[in-house]
Amino acid sequence: MNTIDALTKVLEERRNADPESSYVASLYAAGLDRILKKVAEEAGEALIAAKNVEGTTRDDALIGEVADLWFHTMVMLVHLHQQPVWVLDELASRFGVSGHVEKAGRTTSQID
Image (cartoon, rainbow, N blue to C red; front, side):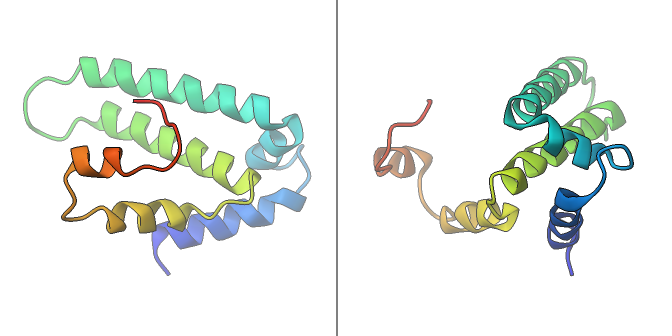
């Protein structure tokens, strides 16, 4: 089992957990707006960490903030009954396709 699948399983199990005993369960109990605010907060922190990167070696602050962002994005997806692996499937389907071509081929309006 890979990391995405293992984490998805845990996130799904937390749907029925006591919000007092689980951070993820407390997010689920607070509802989608709270989860979305957390994703936005983590995105902002990742951006700030990226602005502070110096050099070309691993930056643990940036890696940690992006991990937080990905985690909370996975919480959002699972809360909405979406499988995080579907995001990986979508990315895989784009290999070999120009970003301009992929964007032009979208059937729904999306943010640039």
